[in-house]
Length: 410
Ligand SMILES: [Zn+2]
Image 1 (cartoon, rainbow, N blue to C red):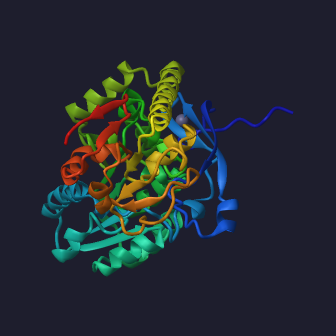
Image 2 (spheres, protein in one colour; image 1 turned 180 degrees about the horizontal axis):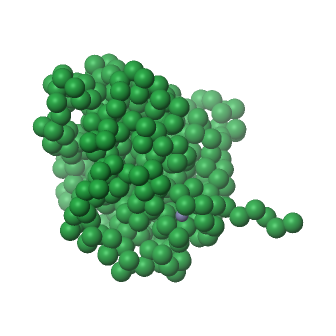
Image 3 (tube, rainbow, N blue to C red; image 1 turned 90 degrees about the vertical axis):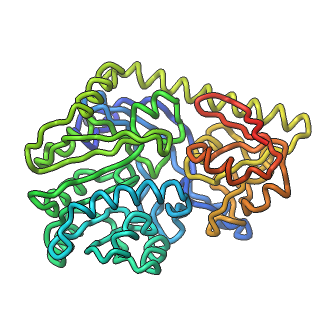
């Protein structure tokens, strides 16, 4: 009997497998090393990515159960980055100006620690935040944000509709690409979005990922990388139409999408990106094969660098125990034998160990005291913010995306 084919979760076409990463841990599952049994039983799964050349979406095949990824150990607290805080405050101010304080409310799906809704709460705008990870929801509630701990889907949308009615804005930033059942979410948004409402989505953009060869956008929690074409395919099924986009450099290149139930005129900038996707051949499998080769080259270069410096007796550390870096570290076989530690400023992460590679996470305050010979910028998407913050340190910064580069800032 033939093996059943994997089908695209957006358009139901057959997916082509392009990259088999082998056994990978859950990227956000940081570990406590005093628990031997836990380490022995560390959950791993065979991570494979595929591409649908019918709708141009990149997807993880065989996504682990969502409860294994989003739980009370979720390690990403969005408000840790001042830059991201500022980025979302600007969006919040724009949307608040368009809201009627008496009537309207805003719903955020994947509200994390309340980084975006904080300004709505502070200015007494009606808002609802929903997120599946208990610890980040607790942080949001402590900040006086109206947050619910649940997975958003069709069923949850009916509960929210019952309690709050239809939403003027539905905002989903850096979350939609985490959700395996995108159909249920789109259906839920169809239920909740007001006829005059706007849906705003923002997440890492397929073309940027392709251009810089960012292997790191791919891990279990990022089970989709979206494009204009794939989002259009998904939401048009639910009569929600894309009409505008805005591009940002955040997270290695992100796209903000604006959708409406009304037939709004498509903007020139949206047309520009539609054409850019076509010119970059996002419906051609060879584009993704090239991407796969580029990712392998990046991992090999980093591994060779770390091994050669380690043989010279140099101390190599990392900065930013990011979920993104879990893919690079595990795929490149770089572990605690090659990297002394990874510095991070998130209190939740300090003194834990990275998944799979088991590298100790140290308080970022210690970097300028330790001064390792080299520090790999795993949080490369926050490069300027980090180098400025750590300017007292004598370390040499190592970047590896899109290629290996040493930065002697100090
Ligand atoms: Zn598809």
